[in-house]
Every structure is written in C-alpha cells, then in structure tokens.
Image (cartoon, rainbow, N blue to C red):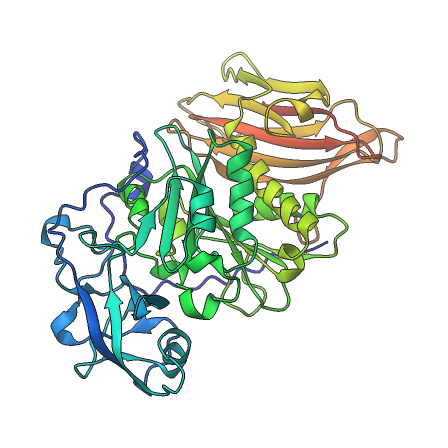
Length: 498
C-alpha cells in the first residue's frame, strides 16, 4: 500500500455562495427533508426556440453564455430570496438543454453574457450537449430551461422520495433524493450518477443504517454510465437553487459531509480531498489503507497525481454541506470496477464516522487537581463487535484550568506483546460536538534492548505519527484499532497525564 502526503492545495478563485451564516456558528437544529420556500415569484423562464452557436473563444465543457436580455449577474447561490429575479438566468445556475422533449445535456450559466442574441458555448459543449446529426457549429429550435416543471423555477432537479426512484426513474430528467432529519450528523453524497458505482456506494451506506446515515444523490437520464460528457457539472458549480434539496444546508450544515467520485487520472487510486483539515484527511487515508491492505493501491490525501482532484475549493458543494468542510473521495477504475475494493473503500469511509458517532466504550473525566493520570481502556477486543465502530473508543474530558498546561497522551495495546500494532486517531470534541482530528498514527510494539515489550510511535514513512496537543476545555476521543501479530483484535489503552 502506497500513501502520499504532499500538500498542494489550490486557491479558490470562484465567486459563489454568500451563506446565511458562518459555518462554524451554525450548529443548531438541522433542517428536514424537502424543498424550503425560496420566497420568490415562481415565473418560468423556458426558452423553447433558442439558437445555440459555437464561440471559438470559449473552452469550457460545461458553461454556456446566455443573451444579456436573459442574464442576471447575481450569482444563483447568493442567499438573497427577496430580490432573486426568476425571470432571468442567473450566473452559476444549471440549465436543462433539450431537443424537442429529449434531454440532451446540462450547462452552467457563465459569469459573462453572450455577445449576441444566441446562447454561446464551446465547440466541445456544443458537440456533446446540443448538437444533433449534421449540426456542427449552430443549432436552432433548442429548448433551454431552468425548471423541471412549470412553476418550480429555478429548480432543474425533481425531488424523489426514495433512492430507487432516483436510480431507476430518471429517464429524460434530473432527479435528486435527500434523507436528512434533525438528528443527522453525517451525509454521504454522489452528485454524478454516471461515475460508475459511486451511487451504489452511497446507497450501500444509507441502506446499512438509514437512521444514522444521511444521503443526497442525483439521478440523470437513467444514470447512463456513458453520459459524463453530456451531464457532468463540476462540484464547485453545483447550485442549491438548481438542486433545491440542498438549500437547507446553506444555513444549517451537518457536522460531517462526504462525496464519492470517480476519476481517470494516472498515479493515484484513491485521493482523500475536500477542505477539511489535512490531519483529518490523513486519518481517512490511513483507514482506507487498512481496509485495502494488500491490494497494491496508491492512496493519497493531497494532490499528488497532477490532476485537479483535491476538492479543496470552498465552493465545492461538499465543503459547505459540512460544518467545518467536507471530505471528497476520488477513486480510480481499479477501485470502483472491482466489487470487493469499492465495498471495502465504502466501508472504510463509513467506519471513520461511525467511530465518531458511536458512544465511547470507556470514558472518564481528568482531574487536573488531584489526578496525575486518567486512563480509559478495554482489556480485550470485544469492542470490535459492539456498535457500528469496529475499534476501541475512549473519551476523556479535560476541564479548563487557570494554567491550562499542555498534557501528554499515552496510547497502547493492552497487555503488550512483541508484534502487536495499533492505529490511533485522536480527536478534539468541543462542546458543540464536531470532532477535529488532532493527532495519531501507527504504533508498533517491539522488543527493547533490556528484553521488555515497548510501544513505539512510527514517525517515519508516508504516515508519520502526529503528536496531539492536549489542553483543557474539551473532550478528547481516542479511536484505536489494536491487533496482535496475527491480526486478532486486542484490548487498548488511552491515557492523558500531566
């Protein structure tokens, strides 16, 4: 297993959502399913006899320029319900492109208006998403619309009440499904149904535990795997007005959000991206490495492939669904086209959040006055079959003190034997409940020179140990996978001391 950790994050340059509140402050009751009122006049803008022409200066495979008479430069994701003009196509919203009644493609309204009375597109977009046989640079009688039915502008995605309806009943249309209630803490998403098997990964997670696991998926024209060139919308361009089931996340993000994707770039099989912290991404990559051990896959948590896979753009929809950014999982055909590998990848990602949402196997409160050390532990590996999390979970609350001195963390396998190993994630959990990964990595148990068994933190290689900084005023959670030299679950120990 090869893991990479180069940090090459791109600066966001797109002007997109003005959110209703700062994400870090929006931890209250979660919005329920369904389309919330946008508070605008629902006047249709359905152009049924438009001409679409190629502008040779345009290169985007997804963006279209609409005539100035139809164009509003106010971005679709700007949260201004009272003044949102539904008689115009807004910058950043998605449009349906039809030939007759047949859905031919999608496009995102560009930030620049057309220089003519026609809709202007690149040659690539025209060929893939507009043209019929014999049309090379111009098409007349094209229907362009920002509503899936009369009176719902600017929504292009028709809501569905089940996953199966999105998967099996989206012929000639765009559909979306959302499962989320007031208690949902994590939502798993697949925005591109033509990216083979990513929909299935979300479906599998949701069906495993629909009470815990929120889901948002899109279906487009029967989810044809060959339709990427017609319907792909870059994740940073996805508009919550075009996909209105996402609107509730604008003011009320969930704690954690994940998107599953497929890529065809050489050099990396799974890239853990998103705007969440590099420590968190590294932890997810390490768990993926565990589940896919022996498969010979390259797994990275930053942009190592030379392709734009990091997903760190703040306007990437998965990054504003989550309270402190999201996780984007990019997977190669070597992963997704193999049933065992894609299911292992799916289960690995789910396990990260199950271990944050399950209750602790043992917990205690650190006494900074009379207690030098606080220890939580499991004496055996029974925790591996308790709850959803297959690892030991230990919580220690560290109260605030006037001095608030830094404290030391100790993690180990219970009853040390040479050859034991443990993977450790240390999370800080503030009072509002969102977990930040602050450290961890691999521990090996070795024979010392004086013939004792001792735990050693692995500080070299692609997954070096990150030493956590522990201070008062929060709860710290250790998630430990402790194994014997033969791979059997063992007990685990988590301690905090002065």
